[in-house]
Every structure is written in structure tokens, then in C-alpha cells.
Image (cartoon, rainbow, N blue to C red; front, side, top):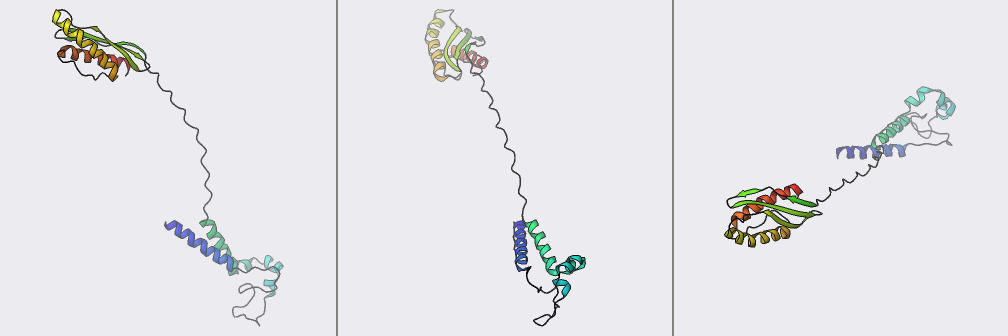
Length: 196
């Protein structure tokens, strides 16, 4: 903010000095400091060296002692400092290339075999374009009639829940807790292999 105020004040001062500078190429008279004595008025004599352009140009001391010229030089310097240089626009950067999306997995993925109290449980899932389209058990407890009855009801429910939820985080089936726990563990390893 301070720089802006200084720049504005410098510019205003420079412009005031610039507009107050009297220039005339046709006039035979000049202002104070360019030939008129300090107390000059209507009857003051004019310095011939100051009115003769050839003499003023050949006398290097005349330009150095002329206060109006010095004021103009100061105003020009102040204006140059106050006017900021045009900043170049940065080159347009090329758009980054889009990273190709990884292909969605497809295929059959078999989970680890999980040993439970009643026997091993292993699950396999079928995936198409990143979606589980089928889930089935490869192994499940069926050595006795009771295990067979429980798992014939529980396994289809678990399989359908995997397809519905598209996740390894499924609910167990009441009455088939051991099979449900083994199913979830094997299912999670199948999901890990499919990168789902």
C-alpha cells in the first residue's frame, strides 16, 4: 500500500512539474533562469545568449544551470520510476496428459481356504468390469447331516448378499455363525486378489 501511495504522489508531482514547464519555439523571451534576471519584470533586459538557440546549445553550462530543465529531468525520472514496466505474460503451459484409468478387473478370483471348527470354507467370486456378478463356495462343511442342512440354507443367502452389496462386508446368517465367519474371511481374500 505504501509503494502505491509513493508511486501516485511521485506521478502527480512529475505531472505538475511537466505541465508547469513553459516551452515556446517562436517566442523571443524566456522565463526566469533562462535569461531573465531574478528581479526581472516588464523592463528587465533579456540575456541574448539565452534567446539564441545556437549559443545555448554550444554552451554546456547553460543547460546545467537552467532550473527549469533540471525540474523537467527530475519529473521525467520520477515518472519513469512510478510507471511499472509491463510484466511479460507467462507462456501458456501445456495441459498435462490425463493419466489413463486402470482397467477394471474381470475374471474369477478364489479366496483363501479358511479352516473353521466344522471344516474348511473357501469362496470364489466372478467379476466383470469391476462388479461382482457371482459368488459361490468352493468348500464348505458338509461332513454330517446337520452341517449339510444348515449350509444348504446359509450358503445361497451369503452368495446373494455379496452380489447385492458388492462388498466383502456382509452380514452372517443366523444359525450358521461358524460358516458365515469362514465365508467372510475367504471372501475378503478373494476381493483383495481382484483389487476391489
